[in-house]
Length: 506
Image 1 (cartoon, rainbow, N blue to C red):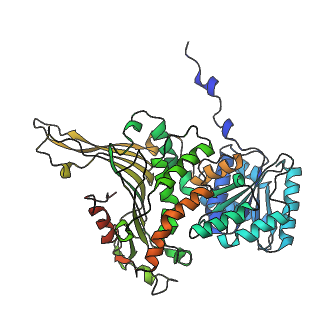
Image 2: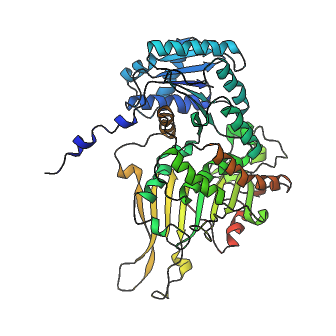
Image 3: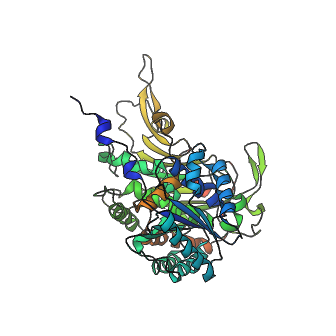
């Protein structure tokens, strides 16, 4: 008799449910909290993944009471939650909503926060388990962490835990990242610090691990003997918009390559970990980052650009220098590309090309593993340049999924060969909807499950790769202009042309 899989597996949610706890959000009135964090909490509650006593505490300067905060939470959920609104779910969540008025530098606010958390421990059963989400500028991290420490909120007590969640940017270079890490880890132990990179919470990013290590067909060819090169792209078709104040002086490389793209590279290139425990995954990612060779001649190993005014999608758009709040002489890049080499046995000779930019041809994030040319002696009439190389493309966004490109015979009497694609899409293959990245990451924090969160060593290694590039760009004039709706400056094309390769056009 075949076993009943339901009897063996039971409810798969049970191993994922968070224990009793609360989430304290600093910067709770900001866009991130309103559009992402609060809706993610509701979606977790709607999925039955939070403890019945789970509570959310907002901390901010506004003179609000709990009812006003509850109204904000309700509006956020109704506007941005993924799950349909359910009165019973909200009613349960509503009971655990609290607001604490206070500034970041005022000890009285942290004293009131401590009182509220003690009240939640008594009335909601949060058991001394509290996570502090710093949805605030990094410049405010020291004052907030010190305020938490002074109020006795950073140390775990009586079997409970305390954790802190910080958002990128994790510094602006290796030195500032090390400083920031030291500041936070003076107050919270290293294993209680969770650095959020929301890209690592996306289903498709996590699927890189499943694709590679849960299947036997890919791993034997996942190396430089079969792979010609790898392209990792994060492209946006919009400009800086309302982010101008943050973006200028940061630029594309610091904003995206240092964190998102180098993390994608590490997951793509790493060796199989001994387990999916956080320490094992992190150790393999760190080995990859340590193996990346220093860029030699930076002008031929990196490219940058800045979008101009022009036509895109049937409308005229501003150039970067015409955007509101951008200085007319800004040298901040809106496009950045790097050619990196991983100097280990697996990847020696197969370069990794990373690129990101704004006002590009379309919005897309993908990892493309491009394989070596096949021998052509059987099909001499087919030019390899026309046929193209086999490729495995992992689409992170939009239309999450995986595409394989390979050659196939065209129907008919003649032996003609051309490229075809085989496509897997999450939306077609699964009836479940993919959770938002912040749902997965918040749940992992509450459960203390950290494989997708970069630790300070990964952050500092990433800056070590990027710092020489930024230093060179700061002394080499302005970025090359490129037209909106294109795929970046000509220098980026030359970056690959030197290797007789071309960028993919997603």
